[in-house]
Image (tube, rainbow, N blue to C red; front, top):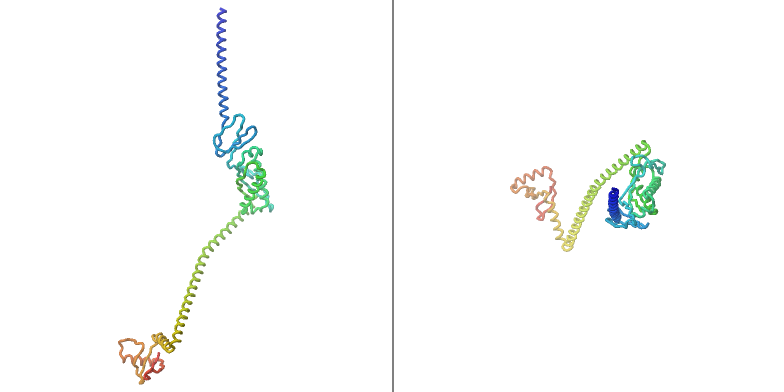
Length: 350
């Protein structure tokens, strides 16, 4: 009985020893698989389009900027990814609207609340990680210093109304100069004034009225410029028309005078050659111009009318002509006598 029990115990022990060996083997396989998986998972990394990576090998950092899949040595090289997109933060007010550092003083000793928003991006990931502990906080402190310095050199009216663009430009340039000196791997993209308000409601209302008056002034100036732009072309066109008409009249008078001079010169040349003929021709031409408007009555020596020039009608007879002439003579006709070439008749003009 004791012998059978002993054999049974030995059999159980042999089985346990065999199971223990198999369990150790399974554990080793699982451990090897886990180690292999860890090694494989730690041997590569990926970079997105908006990221850059810093690979540190035994404390020596190196920037990797190419997007995609990259490999590294597990447990020897460490990778830190840096976001290179444009980021921003507010200066002056918290996100919940509570006042923080918004209260500032202007050059004319007035208090004002100003809210800025700054945008930046990482330009050198190695310097952004290792040149300073918190580059964003450094940028914010620099921005606050530049903002207060610039606001302190402008009047409250400029900050609230007309000088915002100039103030933003000056602040941006000042921050860029200081960031270049600090060289912390980040760069300012833009800084803008989000809001600027006086410290009290009464002052705010007064500035609103001033702004309304300025807008009214701009509107009046724009309307005046519009009216001027409409009237000037019309006036210029009218002036051009007057000048053109005057120039045309001038040219017409010149051409007329030149024609008369040329006609006189040609007539004078003919007169020099043939004085008597030219005199008679000039006399006949003058009479041709005068006679159509003058009624001429030719009478014989005995006082009877023989001919009337110009003829009133080709169908009237001599008697009717005589009657008309007599009636005209009795109604106040002025007669001037002149001898005719034959010496027998007189010419009377009315």
